[in-house]
Image 1 (tube, rainbow, N blue to C red):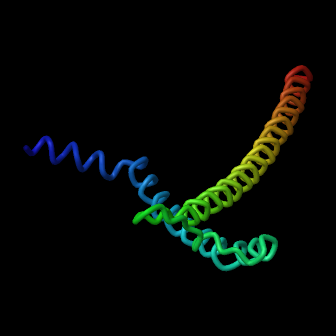
Image 2 (image 1 turned 180 degrees about the horizontal axis):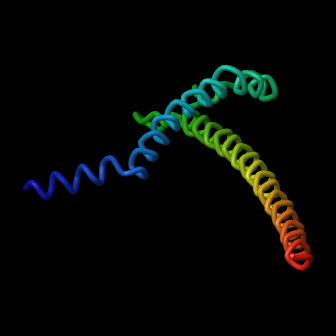
Length: 129
């Protein structure tokens, strides 16, 4: 039992698990922000173009069953907006990483050029002796 607890502690505090927990918490908060954006900003503008239709209230009654397909449409719009925002964020982060990699490569090139020059100077000094 003691080995199980030790193994569980090692698993629970490992970096990947903690990173995943943080990602879930931030993702949940981000989802609430995007849902609020969709509900309070985007959908009212979209309803203007659709003649005042509110997606969340759309429903179809079949016998005694009420099918609220408007909520499903609302979820699709939420998903598309979240996917678009994540795409733009990942694209921006990738662009920044590429720029950072280029800076590092340029710095390595400068350093190697300086090292080559210093090596040549060292060789010239050695040859004069």
